[in-house]
Length: 272
View 1 (spheres, one colour):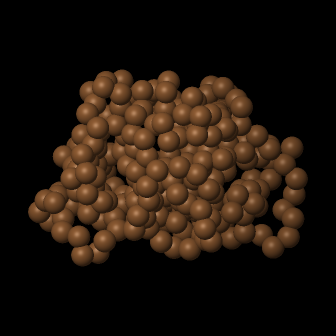
View 2 (spheres, rainbow, N blue to C red):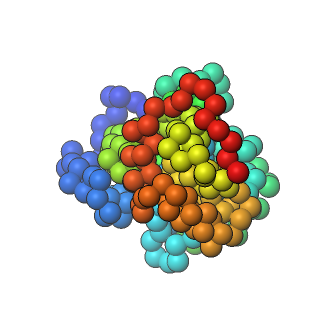
C-alpha cells in the first residue's frame, strides 16, 4: 500500500472543464453517475464509492460500470467486521484535518478483509482520496475489478492531480443533499440525536431511535440492517413507526426536525 499527499503544483491532466462539468449536477440525482463517468476518463474503473468511516460509518454515493452493481453488497460485507479494523486507507496518526491519497492492490489487503469484501466481488485494486476531520475519514474510492487492465502510473498520476478537487465537489454535494451533516461528517453525536428525538417524541422506542440515528448518520436501509443485525423489512418497519410518531414521511424531514430542536440539558425521559 502506498499513501502520499497531493501536490498543489501538479498540473491537471485535463482542462479545467473536467471539474466544471460536475458543478451543474451538484445536489441532483445524476451527480453520482457523472462522478463515475468522469473518474473512468482518468482511471478505467469497475466501480466507485464515497463513504465515511471512523465515526458512524455511512456510504453516500456508489455505482458500477459494465456489470451488476455490487457496491451495496460490498458495503454490507464491510460493515459486518472489516470496517472496525480497517487500516487500508492509511489513516493512522493523531486526528487532524488533512487530505491524502492511497493506492492498494487486493493482495495487500489483510486476509479477513480481502476474503469478505474483495475476493467475493472481484475487486483487484483501489485508489482513494481521503480527508480526515477529527475522528472521521471521508473517502472517495475507485476500484479496478478482476479482468480489467492494471492501472498505469500515468493514470494514477492523473487521479492524484484531480482527486482533491473532486472530493471537494463531493463534499459540497453532501452538504446540499444531507441536511444537518455538513461535508458528510456529523456535527452532533448520536447521544445528542437521541436526546433531540426524545424531546420531540418521548414515546419513541429504543429500536426506533437506533434506526433514526443511523438514518441521520447517512446509512442506507441495507447498512442499518447489517449494523443492527436485522432484516431490511424490519428496519423499514421501525422507520415507518418512528416517522408516524414524529408525523413525518421522509428522511429530509427527520433531519429538519432534529436540527430544529435544541438538545435538552437534562434527561428527557426513557424510551420504551
